[in-house]
Image (cartoon, rainbow, N blue to C red; front, side, top):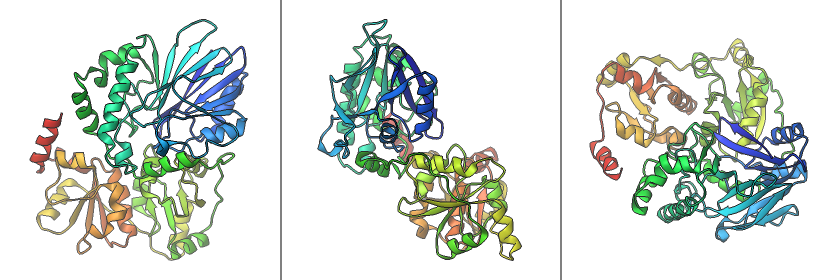
Amino acid sequence: MFLKRFFEPTLAQASYLIGCAAAREAIVIDPNRDADQYIQAAQAEGARITHVTETHIHADYLSGSRELAARTGATLHLSDEGDRDWKYAFASDPNVQLVKQGSRINVGNVVIDVVHTPGHTPEHLTFLVTDTAGAEEPIGAATGDFIFVGDVGRPDLLERAVQVHGTMEKSARTLYASLQQFATRPEWLQIWPGHGAGSACGKGISAIPHSTLGYEKRFNWAFRADSEETFVRMVLSGQPDPPKYFAEMKRLNKMGPRVLGGFPRPPHHDLETLRRTLDAGGLVIDTRPALDFASGHVPGTINIPQNGSFTTWAGWLVPYDRDFALIVDDRTPHAADAAARLLAMIGLDRITGYFDATVIDAWSSDGRLLGKIPQVLASDLEKSLSHGAVTLIDVRNDAEWESGHIPGAIHIPLGYLADRMRDVPRAKPVVVQCAAGARSAIGASLIAASGVDRVINLIGGIGEWRKAGLPITVDVEQTLDKTLIR
């Protein structure tokens, strides 16, 4: 047997190629949309991909299962568990085979046993992997979003992301039962999870790529909860806000992602196209670093830097029903192709083309003004606030706000800022602030693009404010409530 783990850092997402060297066959579990990487890895092993499967209907990225099966001619195995609301709409495709508790997938001498492990989602499956050439019991389990290293999959997404009301507590209890049942398996069983640190599918996932069931039973908080009630309380508290695009991912993954046949390469556009696009109210995303954008940008564009958080904030802020274009950093080779790949990972396929960063100078040389985002120090902001000279917008999340915020700030989390632009006062200059300055830079670009004349970014965010010893307001009641919950 051979096994290769793939990890997509911008999604904190793991997938697995598992194969039989003797039969030269392989299965891929939880592939993302980059099909080429799996095909090439199988070829390197002298094998072909004969089976593709996934643990559940994903919420945080667009599944590549349908794409990979179409590209390779493999059988696509999909869950037949869960109620009728969580069945795959493309289950009648000719290459699809439905599986459920007790099903078995044979990949040469490698046997994949299907276990229903609901809780994160109703249809969730775990795959037990046995190399029958040398063993009679499983070596490992591909657990998807069921068991992570140090955490478990959150059971609140159906309610909080997909708006299926009244499911949170019921799902948490189902998850508890699944964990109790799975805990009876051998402690040597390796755990191969579907996500690592940084994923919004859990609240405390470790960066360690894999574990064992015995280790998780000893150190994972979910196995150490002393009762079902304790587990339910703990698993539902402190979960991060699910990104807005999660609901769209659920819908697309259930209905069937479009088969791309490879990532499209966006065409290069010129200055005249940029003018026409913006004059028509089109959406243009500047992917350059925040400080580059702040020092000079084309007015009306928004800044989502092409860094580790690119897909997260694109998913929050880019509408799925609109075409858009990109401005990319021409100092980075193949930046447009890389951006298109990342956006395709979450189903943002409507890229009309890209402009390289030289368009910024061309815009200025053509006699048009560039936009700028001034930067302010914490000490200077404190003086401006004391004189009532500015409006401060805090774009951190709810938990961060409740743990302490700058007096007088208005709280609008970044993910909801575009929808709540009417709540931003425009009578005074607007200062935007987050924890360290990255999210506030994106927020400042959104506010500037909405037509606010003077938008400023707080350097270093509330972290620098605290270092300067400036006052902080804490929501005492909220903090006490959360302490009691824990």
